[in-house]
Length: 150
Image (tube, rainbow, N blue to C red; front, side, top):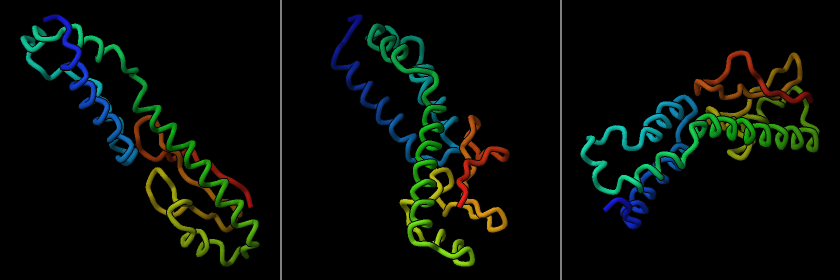
């Protein structure tokens, strides 16, 4: 009565599927969706805790509160990897400065900004490729650019 393993596993699957769905969201929606996922059983009526309270408690304490911000950090790391790969490609193919913006636009999905799903930014005056990192609020950080010099 206090711990139902199968019921806990069923509820865990729903919970983990919901957290995996966070990876498909744009950064601006990750934090809010993560809070809803973290709340888990908070929306359930109090009497639902009479069934499988130990299993529900295990699911609640098993997930770190930092998960949404961790997902944003992963996006920034992925963006860094893509940015360096694009830099390498531009340098290997010796793309002229005049053609760089067009080259970056046509580089393909493997080289896109993971935070907003569009091509990386090109600053012709400074000869820099960059993207705006995802902040804790889930929005592109206005002041924080991750860049590479060409």
